[in-house]
Length: 124
Image 1 (cartoon, rainbow, N blue to C red):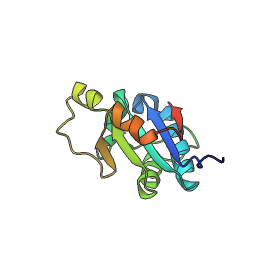
Image 2 (cartoon, one colour):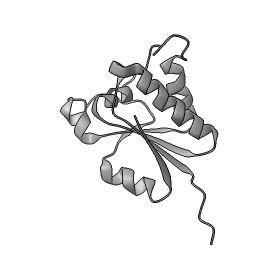
Image 3 (cartoon, rainbow, N blue to C red):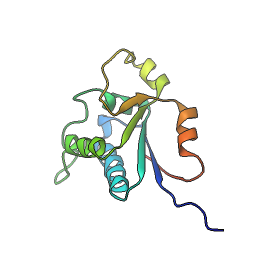
Image 4 (tube, one colour):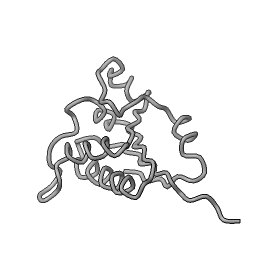
Protein backbone atom coordinates (compact mmCIF):
# COMPACT_ATOMS: atom_id res chain seq x y z
CA UNK A 1 0.00 0.00 0.00
CA UNK A 2 1.30 3.43 -0.94
CA UNK A 3 1.62 5.94 1.89
CA UNK A 4 0.11 9.42 1.79
CA UNK A 5 2.37 12.11 0.35
CA UNK A 6 4.34 14.22 2.80
CA UNK A 7 2.55 17.55 2.67
CA UNK A 8 3.81 19.25 5.84
CA UNK A 9 7.02 20.96 6.85
CA UNK A 10 7.73 21.96 10.42
CA UNK A 11 10.63 24.33 11.03
CA UNK A 12 11.75 24.81 14.63
CA UNK A 13 13.56 28.11 14.98
CA UNK A 14 15.21 28.70 18.35
CA UNK A 15 17.29 31.70 17.35
CA UNK A 16 16.23 35.27 16.83
CA UNK A 17 18.09 38.12 15.20
CA UNK A 18 21.15 37.48 17.39
CA UNK A 19 21.92 34.92 14.64
CA UNK A 20 20.25 36.49 11.62
CA UNK A 21 21.80 34.03 9.15
CA UNK A 22 20.12 31.12 10.96
CA UNK A 23 16.80 33.00 10.78
CA UNK A 24 17.43 33.61 7.09
CA UNK A 25 18.04 29.91 6.38
CA UNK A 26 14.93 28.86 8.33
CA UNK A 27 12.76 31.25 6.31
CA UNK A 28 14.42 30.20 3.03
CA UNK A 29 13.60 26.56 3.80
CA UNK A 30 10.05 27.49 4.85
CA UNK A 31 9.31 29.58 1.76
CA UNK A 32 10.80 26.89 -0.49
CA UNK A 33 8.46 24.32 1.11
CA UNK A 34 5.50 26.65 0.56
CA UNK A 35 6.46 27.00 -3.11
CA UNK A 36 6.27 23.19 -3.33
CA UNK A 37 2.67 23.31 -2.09
CA UNK A 38 3.41 22.15 1.45
CA UNK A 39 1.67 23.32 4.61
CA UNK A 40 4.36 25.05 6.66
CA UNK A 41 4.62 25.99 10.31
CA UNK A 42 7.62 27.71 11.84
CA UNK A 43 7.58 26.97 15.56
CA UNK A 44 9.49 29.81 17.19
CA UNK A 45 11.13 29.07 20.53
CA UNK A 46 13.55 30.94 22.77
CA UNK A 47 14.53 34.35 21.27
CA UNK A 48 12.84 33.52 17.95
CA UNK A 49 9.45 34.32 19.50
CA UNK A 50 10.30 38.00 19.06
CA UNK A 51 9.90 37.49 15.29
CA UNK A 52 6.17 37.24 15.97
CA UNK A 53 6.06 40.92 16.93
CA UNK A 54 5.38 43.54 14.24
CA UNK A 55 8.52 45.09 12.80
CA UNK A 56 10.96 42.58 14.29
CA UNK A 57 11.76 40.45 11.22
CA UNK A 58 13.83 43.08 9.44
CA UNK A 59 17.34 43.64 8.19
CA UNK A 60 19.81 41.82 5.98
CA UNK A 61 21.55 38.82 7.50
CA UNK A 62 24.58 38.75 5.22
CA UNK A 63 26.14 40.30 2.15
CA UNK A 64 24.06 39.34 -0.89
CA UNK A 65 21.27 37.79 1.18
CA UNK A 66 17.62 38.76 0.67
CA UNK A 67 16.12 41.10 3.26
CA UNK A 68 14.46 39.28 6.14
CA UNK A 69 11.32 41.41 5.91
CA UNK A 70 10.84 40.31 2.29
CA UNK A 71 11.21 36.62 3.22
CA UNK A 72 8.89 37.07 6.17
CA UNK A 73 6.29 38.69 3.89
CA UNK A 74 6.63 35.90 1.31
CA UNK A 75 6.20 33.34 4.10
CA UNK A 76 3.04 35.01 5.40
CA UNK A 77 1.61 35.66 1.92
CA UNK A 78 2.23 32.03 0.98
CA UNK A 79 0.13 30.81 3.90
CA UNK A 80 2.96 30.02 6.30
CA UNK A 81 2.08 30.05 9.98
CA UNK A 82 4.33 31.27 12.79
CA UNK A 83 3.60 29.47 16.05
CA UNK A 84 5.09 30.96 19.19
CA UNK A 85 6.09 28.87 22.19
CA UNK A 86 3.92 30.00 25.12
CA UNK A 87 6.59 29.36 27.75
CA UNK A 88 9.13 31.37 25.74
CA UNK A 89 6.62 34.20 25.25
CA UNK A 90 5.89 34.30 28.99
CA UNK A 91 9.59 34.16 29.93
CA UNK A 92 10.09 37.36 27.91
CA UNK A 93 6.93 39.09 29.17
CA UNK A 94 5.54 39.25 25.61
CA UNK A 95 2.15 37.66 26.26
CA UNK A 96 0.24 40.92 25.88
CA UNK A 97 2.33 42.26 23.01
CA UNK A 98 0.75 42.69 19.59
CA UNK A 99 1.54 39.79 17.22
CA UNK A 100 1.84 39.64 13.43
CA UNK A 101 -1.33 38.32 11.70
CA UNK A 102 0.08 34.87 10.85
CA UNK A 103 1.33 34.24 14.42
CA UNK A 104 -0.38 32.32 17.18
CA UNK A 105 0.62 30.91 20.55
CA UNK A 106 1.07 27.12 20.39
CA UNK A 107 2.95 24.75 22.64
CA UNK A 108 4.59 21.40 22.03
CA UNK A 109 1.39 19.34 22.12
CA UNK A 110 -0.38 21.30 19.34
CA UNK A 111 2.84 21.26 17.31
CA UNK A 112 3.06 17.46 17.44
CA UNK A 113 -0.65 17.05 16.83
CA UNK A 114 -0.29 19.18 13.68
CA UNK A 115 2.88 17.39 12.54
CA UNK A 116 1.38 13.92 12.90
CA UNK A 117 3.39 11.15 11.28
CA UNK A 118 4.07 12.74 7.93
CA UNK A 119 5.77 16.10 8.52
CA UNK A 120 9.34 16.81 7.52
CA UNK A 121 11.03 18.56 10.44
CA UNK A 122 13.91 21.05 10.24
CA UNK A 123 15.54 22.69 13.23
CA UNK A 124 17.58 25.90 13.34
